[in-house]
Image (cartoon, rainbow, N blue to C red; front, side, top):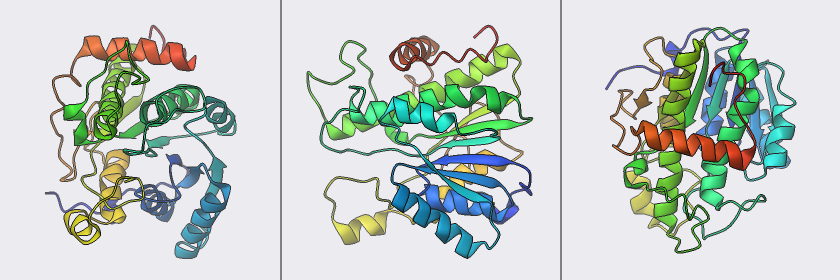
Length: 289
């Protein structure tokens, strides 16, 4: 394991970062450390009350920090569009927010909740912000996936999982989609000659509010690490000069090998086209995409 810590990040003065789910979990320490290094951080969250409280906590820890709250509900495409319209400049997009293993539900637009929030919401947000990302040198998109992707399966004939819903299998599907999207975005950026790195991360088992299933509290805390440790992977992926586009960075800050499904270019291309159709976000800013 590398000895890298957030203190090794470069000076980010003049750079703008958007962090989704920045009010809690690994999103909050991610936003905090980016702000500590001088970045202007847009802390996106669904709840205004909790989002503004998170902003205040960062300012207390880093007096003079350039941080602001932005309302974003990834389970509502109208909210995604409204939020994206407020972002003038972005150098780093950290697709961090997500839901994990809730009872079956649907987003406002009728998508299965985990797939709709974790994948489609971030797909749409990235596409809407892409022109602003491409306008900035060295822009990066970091999408938080999980090694649960190894168990992911995508049935395009049952995306709402009406034929059967499993909390863990639906979560694994959404994390596979995150990784497929990351790798396909990098392929398309490379073909277009765009100055953009797309990177996925697996933060490891982290004790955050995303977990919505009953667990044995003391044992769970023993097996997981604190949110700040999980954020280290995102921060490394977002700022290290050693990162290469299309990498899947694990908790040891080393590239991990995606599953065979995640490496399927055919599956990635199909998911991309279906996602574009469902969200009506086309990534037109990538020439020849």
